[in-house]
View 1 (cartoon, rainbow, N blue to C red):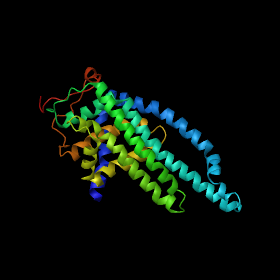
View 2 (view 1 turned 60 degrees about the vertical axis):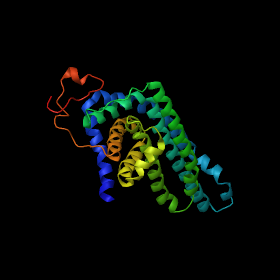
View 3 (view 1 turned 45 degrees about the vertical axis):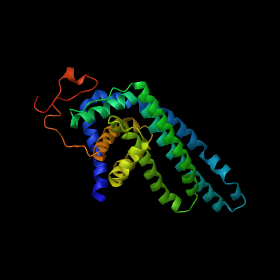
View 4 (view 1 turned 120 degrees about the vertical axis):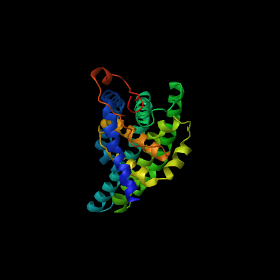
Length: 276
């Protein structure tokens, strides 16, 4: 399990290496999370500035306690609010960014798929139909996260546990939900459109999934970091999906030729067979 977990972590490095082969595609992929990062950072700043007032409002029972106990209760309440909010915000950020930049992220995922499987036939799915399906599934995942966030919030009040165990559970759950989104394009390319199909595949190799999911979730939690992480995570998610589906992720000979200036300008590259 440990080796599988670290194999999942290494997928981020491999995703970084792959997506940088198409730098224009990488920068296109950075635009949607940049837009969403500005919005979510503003929301986070407002939340943090209002946190003392929220903590005070949530702990009226502590008003008659001594100053030290009242302050401890407010700190626990503030941490609980921040923890639950961050869980919901990271998942919402991911799902909304994927919906906003769906055509670009489909191209990144398609590029990675074709690097390892040049003969793959791409489905001719209308982009509006694909976008509608993506939005519906995103709303489902946000809804599930909205149900879990209050539990994370409540658990944050428990001394010690709320500051140690709860963040680990939050990152694990949030990363799992994030990976459900990241592998979606690869599964849909093979006619597997249901969230249940992705979930079953992920349960077959939880350690590798969490190896990618947890560090990606933590990186997404850093304001504005998602701008650069998102295209990389999309490529890494495609690699993970191929692993879960039993498809090869071994480098093909000649799959990464040096590109000239004209070729680097293309939006997406579809590699030819080895040696051509």
